[in-house]
Image (cartoon, rainbow, N blue to C red; front, side, top):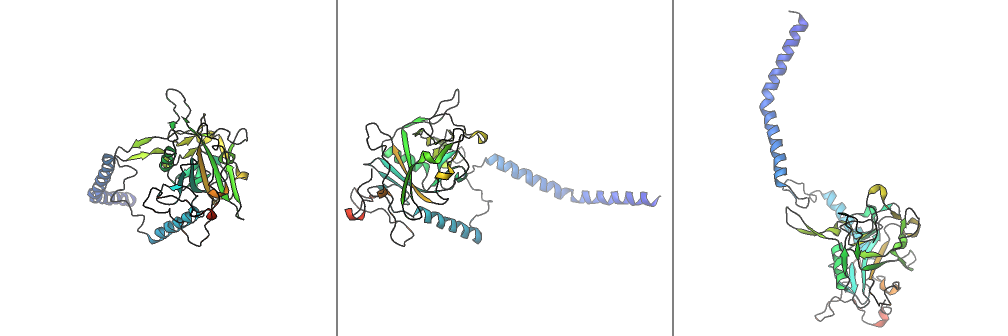
Length: 332
């Protein structure tokens, strides 16, 4: 037999033996993979439910240290200003307050983006900072509850089927307050930080309290407030929006109507305090801008804000100053 032919036949025989010997292992591996796939499909796991086989994100010391440093930096920005006077803190951390008399809501946050297309003006921290101007240290559902506490009436989110219907609800004015590098107080209408990409003018219409919606996870049966995923104060229409613009504003990435008004927005990471004012009829103060009194500076070296005053009477949670010398007159 020709040597080349002999080598070829011998090689094919060896390969056949190797395949035959490994066939059971290959079959076992394939069966295991199929079983895992079927198990994942059968379980229909929710994105919010961890699997026992998922890695623990806190088991790595370096990752844990990075997360703790991120938390420290976030709290440093959140805790720059003291609580506004004459208010009630309604969250565990001092980031959200209501003034029942003045009918105003105060939310601490920071400037997260100064340049780029926008889908919302403000989002909760840890959600959609890449397409919002302000990241707020409160959840959308908490702000929704604050609006209800002041008597604001939600309407309905945008609808597309069977035809387009714009968001409805009580108008809500939004102000942004902060202090510049020299400590000077600043207050502007939030709409001036939102630029129409076509007309190049500021957003003209007030936001409306659309109210978002609830949804229940079919797997774990937990009910969620949709706007907590990021849609707190929107400039593109979302059925999940808490506050939205009352006209057709595309949410398609290539057709976004608004961008950040870069030259009007302070530096990224600037600590700000949003002021939400539901527009009630016959309220002469509803259009008044916030005063410097609502943004007191912490005068100690402590890294944490002073908690709300605790009391056993009905003033529990109030941030009312002990004397008139400690703050300016009540803001309107």
